Image (tube, rainbow over all chains, first blue to last red; front, side, top):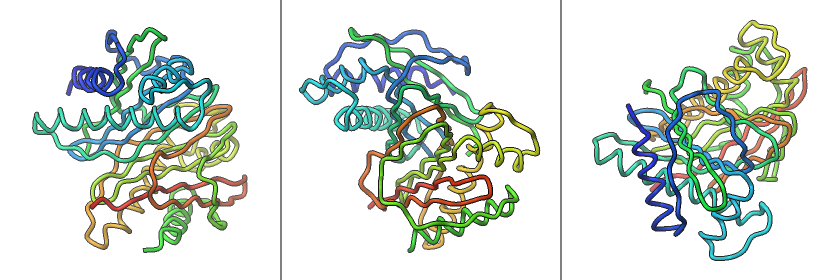
Length: 153
Length: 153
């Protein structure tokens, strides 16, 4: 199963129509050991025809920029508004993925968004799951969409 | 359905049978933003007729002891084995909670487990359903089980 296209399509749609922010997808990476700077991560579980997890990972300044664009207000630090915003972005992208996959006959439910923030943390999954990571470029810097999945139901 | 009882029974049962550790539950905590230092969190999403998330938050020394008992390996730091062990624990806990909730005929599915770990991070759920955050004591220290749930109409 190749999910890069689906993740790129769902993320691009959300940023174009709901956040009104220009983003450019980079090349999908599958290397499980990639580490990148992040200060705010939204996680969402997907379940149904397969088990998955979506992560939207942002360094601080990009999280602030996304929040400002989504909420139409300036934010200076990672506060509850920023966490709400990134949680909502994660929720919307997951919903987009669910819709696109349903059109192909794959049915999924989403769970609820979880928000991680901090100066120094890593997010990982079981070592036998598949993983695709897509970098997105914005005028404020990069963020990453990470999609993990396992074929076992 | 008493979620606190389900959490207490599920956790004690898994720790007793799979990790060979006796654990005792404490009173549920009220704070919904969990601040963690030198810890690892395992999380699984729930979807279907209930939406939610279950997480287990474990300080590093306790996580190492749990991994040693669970996998029969000596571990010195949070490596792939510890991440797999914690992810699997979250998976088993979610399985028990799913079984308890499914007795009412509910159709609940689990997402892929993920782990988060680091020197310092916050973990919160962007949802307004039921919350149970229950501390547990074992010989090596304390850990938390965190369940967020709401019925999907």
